[in-house]
Image (cartoon, rainbow, N blue to C red; front, side, top):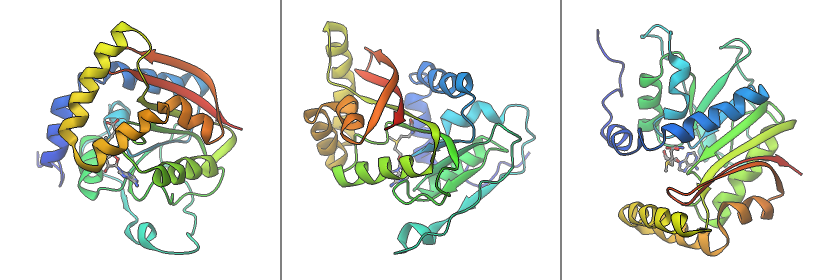
Amino acid sequence: MRRPKGYWYPPGLLYDLAFLTMFRGLRRRVARAVEDGRLYPWLDVCCGTGDQLRDRARGRARGHVPLVRVPVLARSRGHVPGVRVPALCGNELAIGLDLGFGFVRYAAARAPGVPFVCADAARLPFNSGSMRAVSVSFGLHDKSPESRAAILGEARRVLAPDGRLIAVDFENPWNAASRAGALVAWAIERLAGGDHYRNGREFLRRGGLRALLREHGFAECERRNIEFGSLGMVVARPL
Ligand SMILES: C[S@@+](CC[C@H](N)C(=O)[O-])C[C@H]1O[C@@H](n2cnc3c(N)ncnc32)[C@H](O)[C@@H]1O
């Protein structure tokens, strides 16, 4: 059978090759947080290869790829019109969103039936209060402080009053095992280099995920500290 366009996107393949197995447990934990709270609709921003939502494609026929491209919104100024959340997947709608069109196309090709949107997480094309979960994994540490603020501001805007932010990102190490884990993270970040690396170091100097969420008015409801990689997985509510 012919593969959908984007199925062999090299950066997506490389990312999956490097991290698919490593992040399996994390993906399960994020999905469980959504599932346990029945937090739908669920928006995964900075979704990259779409790995987080891939298991939601199980059982769907390959071929139909609902792919939405919103290139103008990312660049437009002023009013951004809201896009109504489609009633696509019954009452368990989950949507992936990324700024990179190659990643979005790859994600959609690998998860048939799951909607992916190409747009800026700092200017979300969704109505206020339309999501009950927004997740962001490894999508904050590499940004400038202004971008992080904009992304968290948008997450807050689109979340319903009882909605939850689910964030996975780096923390400063808290024990010997997490110090070893932080070394692995440092090596990967060093390979990424450039602004990604510099922003990541600055993110930790400011106190990591814990401090960022506090600074932007999110209160932690649940936290899991993961020594490998020196990571935090946090379920938080907007204050
Ligand atoms: C390190 S990857 C993380 C991918 C995925 N969340 C994961 O856990 O594997 C960061 C992703 O954020 C995307 N990205 C960067 N800036 C963005 C923005 N302003 N809006 C949406 N996505 C963005 C990049 O294209 C990239 O795919």
